Length: 133
Image (cartoon, rainbow, N blue to C red; front, side, top):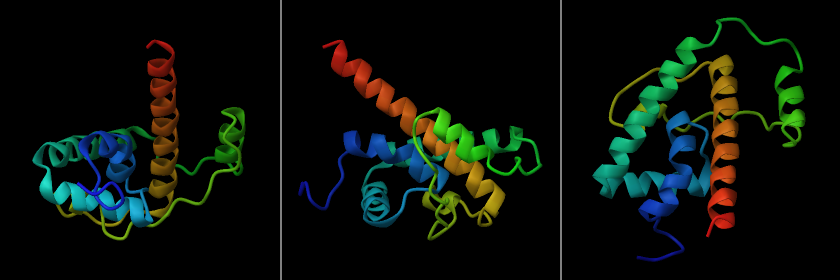
């Protein structure tokens, strides 16, 4: 396996949530999709994450948050100003084998927030694992 181009299951696990939420972009997204083409286990993982993400979005209120809400949350978390949520190249569910309409701008913002939360959780798990060795 070429470290530069191919992504293994361990590396894919770090990007799976962002891919499932439709916020993974660029080269990282291409590498993750290539991995899904050849790994049934990771495809199933992304399918489950996609379903979970869609269920979580369904629990969110159907109103726009107040102006500046996301910026205030990100600043309190020490992550600075959030970048605009990228528009996925293809609908999220298409990567997992189903078809779905592209998410709205409000949904992309919510998904971006969920992805940020997942990144924070992944960072905390890595720090915790490194400290406990």
